[in-house]
Length: 115
Image (cartoon, helix red, strand yellow):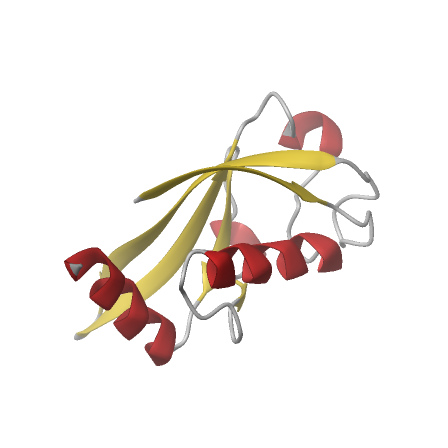
């Protein structure tokens, strides 16, 4: 897990929300699950639910400005933001946004944590 304290903004153009505001991102982590006979990777971007409440604001999922902000944040952390995209709607949580990542991202993540 990488802790962060960065405010990212929403455009209000997502499928499940029209709210435009700042969302405090608290951490990013790469979760590994097992599916059949291979590993599945999920980038989990945690946020402070005081700044975004999914019961009131809806899901951040598919918001274009938030995605751009996540990609920029990852680049700032020394990780390749390009290619990161939203996971399916059912993988979103009450205090995190779920993203799919590329093989290049996975390699960069482990290289960063090894240093």
